[in-house]
Image (tube, rainbow, N blue to C red; front, side, top):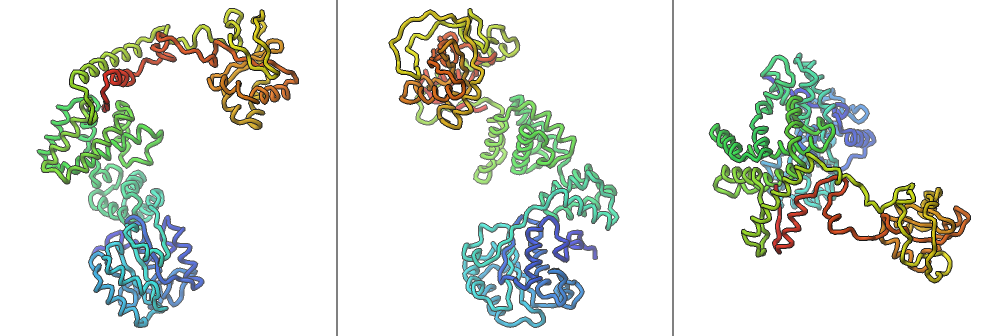
Length: 564
């Protein structure tokens, strides 16, 4: 009789288990030094080696001639456990033996000493399936077990195990097996079985297995039966990931806001007996792939697909914004959650795609805005979008100006220097009565050591240093003009001690006492821009239509949520 590959090549010793050294090394040492616990809990996703390690541990603790913590596989105990002739190692399927009566029988049987082995080992697979009564019946014997009994619980859903059971077990978490380890193991098995497995085929199988060795070997077995050469194309056909062009057609319809096209594709798939729930899940996975492609520079390791499909994903993702993709995922997830509660799954999915293909404006509950306000907002939004597209296509030179004419550069010319400040300056010494002084602004020069002054302030006075971040200083005789983009600096300078601390730091670096004044007309002047300047786009960027829409909604008193 043919033996499946995942059974034929199941590991027989701890050294054969791949990608789980954090588990196999401690278990080997416990067997080697005779420090085995009375109860273990193995948890992890499917196909990662939980049941396999349970059987290896059962053989290792009972082996007559263990080798460095591994079973020898040659003594009568190891052979008897492998062929099932020794009944001291019992494997229980908790999915079918989950009642309290089954656990009571186990408790009574556990009191008897083993017939052949040193330990009576109970392997409870899928332990989370046990009922509450069964867990309660198991609790007492796990707390005070006979010295010849070892319990090994294996589960994929550890959160369903009661805390009272968890506290009595040594817990080991099995990780997903690395893709490169799976691919290497597949190549080894293919060589032994004389299967023509290409490297790209092994890599794709490793990705599709999602970290499970059993799934990978099963898929290899399936591919070897379907094709003489197991390459990426053969794996795609066997795994059912080939011929998924309809997913790209639906996403392109959403991208182009073509609701009629999307509904036609859904109708065609429904006519071909495509499961609507499965279609919704595939579209969620498809938009997840688009999200990864949109945000990750090298997405190959995070997406399971053939290379040619990855290029298609890049092409389609280029037509979506990240917000559009996230919105599509939200809509599809909501539709998937409702599929089990509605009478027509097709209608629910069609409604979801209509939401994605149309720009929807929803008025929040409690709002008094009528349809006239919504229509006015929509019309204004259309005009703003058209204006934004026009400005992006042909930006005018006037929008490229980066600073007002009154702002000064790092090396200002005499014409650029604004008049002296009107408010009385803050000085290190006692404030004198304000008086007008004729100043030669052409001699204004940057203070060379201002960077060192800011570094010293960062050590001596971090709050003041943070306020002065991005500032510049210019000296003129015994006056130091400070231009800071932070408006709080003007208020902070008027507080007691601030000007004095700043002056002392400046004196320690320059050896000169300055009268400190704010630089007016620059970034730190605090002057409010005019309404005309406020409406101009900054740095050449067009105004955001959504900001204008929000402003229009505030004027009308409506609360509006916009979804694309």
